[in-house]
Image (cartoon, rainbow, N blue to C red):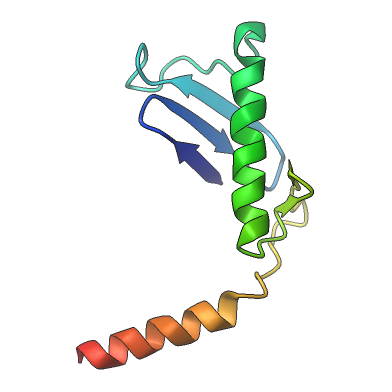
Length: 98
């Protein structure tokens, strides 16, 4: 699962199934009413979906390709090509802190 929010809206995407949820946090801060199927919110959902796909793509995550979200239906996502670089950097930071 991945999600993205600006504090006013929240888009949740389930990368195994491709399903998603959408909440208007200004009127529903407890996230009780999923608006994913409401026609009035399809434009906002498209906006958030594209934004999340672009974020994924920019960081080398295979769940974003060509501005679209790509489900990983096999149940395991492929590692980002940047994973080992991030891991090495985290280990270096951790070692400096000890």
